[in-house]
Figure (tube, one colour):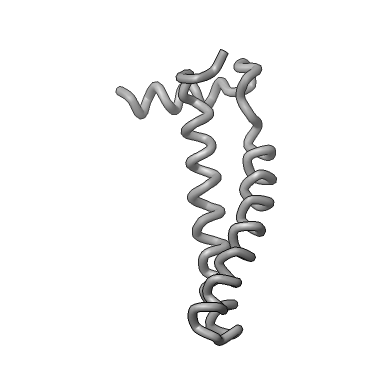
Length: 84
């Protein structure tokens, strides 16, 4: 029931003027992940002292967290709490 309500709201996002389009969520995901990945790279480099290991960690983290963020944004976009 709850999943059905979320999916209905997802289908009707164009009717809700407070919602974002999926393309906006994608662009936000990419820009946020680039910043976050730079942070992860720097921390990994400081901890390991190896740029190749830091690059590997940052590369994996870039993809997984971008996908997670996109879906997180889309779900939150269906929740009315806190919107005017």
